[in-house]
Amino acid sequence: MIKLRNRNELGHARHGWLDTRHHFSFANYYDPDRMHWGDLRVWNDDTIAPQTGFPAHSHREMEIITYVRKGAITHKDSLGNTGRTEAGDVQVMSAGTGITHSEYNLEDTETEIFQIWILPNATGIEPGWGTRPFPKGSRAGAFEVLASGYDTDNDGLPIHANARVVAATLNQGQLTEYPLEAGHHAYLVPAKGRVRVNGVLAETGDGLAIRDETVLVVEAEADSEVVLVETA
Figure 1 (tube, rainbow, N blue to C red):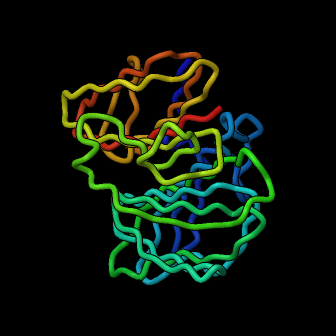
Figure 2: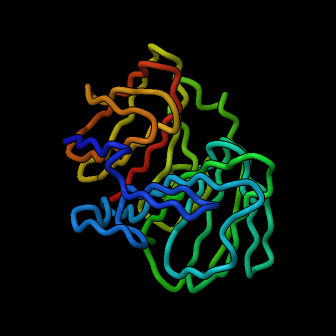
């Protein structure tokens, strides 16, 4: 089963400095049929104006992955962590028992990010943060693990969740496959381009909610960059 969620049908809000689309219920956007997908709770597509951002605020008991599509995001938190994550790279924050953080676009151009929230597999863990570069060349033509809660995934950033976040860059006409574990959910969004997944077309910013599929065949109809979350 693959269900298309067209970008134009997502929750949408403009806050002057922030233009955001919500794949799932979030803030003032509520749809009882879009509360979560497996353990995936939030997927926000954010465009942040230059020299603006999210001021300090707090979270608990959530795994928060930020995938930077364009520009860069600068992080600062109550644990003393600071860092700048550039386009194509990833940061992970485990909110755990509680953390306060800010996320700013300190660049002179817009920053575009995916904010992905996944329910943790345990509560009461120590909060933490990490970031690392993921050169797009290393995921050319195939999916690369960016973040994972599975012991078998050694290369991605660790998260406390029964989930993994992967990405691939595909040239027009290229095809790759992703095996989906039985009983798991997947959610796929093209960060750019246009792809078909088991025959279902998705354009930039669309979402595909997937379950009861064993193998996902992803074919690029244009040069594309895709991000996928698999959860229990």
